[in-house]
Length: 482
Ligand code: ADP
Ligand code: MG
Ligand code: ZN
Image (tube, rainbow, N blue to C red; front, side, top):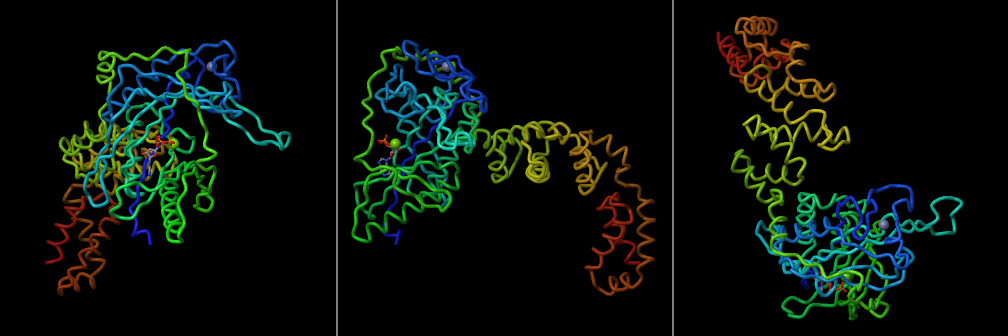
């Protein structure tokens, strides 16, 4: 049924910035502290307290604008967005309305079909976050709501896209790209569960070929990529059903319910707030000259796309590997450091994407906490390359490095894991294994070539994995022929 309609999606993303202090006061933004311990007259909204703009928040916004190809406004304005809610002590939120700091940007995404598509970014504006309400968290507060204003006045960027996406997959591709960029820039932690990166999805459908957009619903309360996809897909089906049943989609805000993957109406257009925006008289217009923009540009780190191309070019990596590695900046940096030392890029990427990732998942830790540093891994890979150990034994060495934090060389030494490359020693084992398995040797000579694998296995086992596999193969072939 949905194939009758074209889907139109525009996203509004709220990005919590990683500044140490709040956007209009000096209070700390640290997460998880004693409620209301990080407050002052400004973020409590006490009368007469005056806001002072956080320079860092401006620079983070400029950098995000530059990384998403926006024009940076030489002059932007803060406005009051008026509404009442208990987590908003002033009765208004300071935001930017008419003149935001960034406009007219774009991001390129890869489509399912393997092509590229440009998604327009309408604007990026700065604003302050609200506090948090705690509803009856303890028995004593069962019928009460408590207000925690530690989060009030935390700096946010709202990044608004054009309605350019045409499927849930495109929406996810755009979001992932944006998420990757803000995390690379270091302007956001990107933790969606903690609400560092939150998305509202605007969804509408229209019959194919129709020029005008359909009426949109705005979906809120979605805190993971998977849920965003689910919410959009549910909403597309729902709207198609409404139209098929002869109804009309109404403009409304809907809440996503992750328990059953559905959306339900929160408020319609009639109940929509009238925010009565007006310029905040307590804040001067923000003036950003071109020198300031240039300084921010100088400070931009290498962005994901550039890093990806460099990995392919410098380390000769397959595009797939480069994509997996650059998906996460910390993972990319780990690989980069390793590959700078051990120049075989593909070997590094195999280990980082394989054993390192597996061990991280098993221990439930972040790559920044890896007990095996890139330098340690590179040193171990060097021992495979110079034939000190086999690739198989290397896994044992790696696990031991992970557990003990010791260097590969000392583990190889202590545990006697050096590869046996002494022909005489391997020959002796080969002879013994052939002598012990006369029937299998006969079968091999009779043409059953697969038996070679059996012999290799036996010899490797007898050598406790330490015999050089290439040499074992060669010697077995020679000796079995005789
Ligand atoms: P509001 O502030 O009321 O949410 P905006 O004009 O800022 O309204 O638009 C919010 C988002 O909705 C933007 O990302 C925009 O691309 C998207 N949008 C606008 N119209 C449509 C539509 N018909 N279908 C889907 N998305 C839309
Ligand atoms: Mg909106
Ligand atoms: Zn404060």
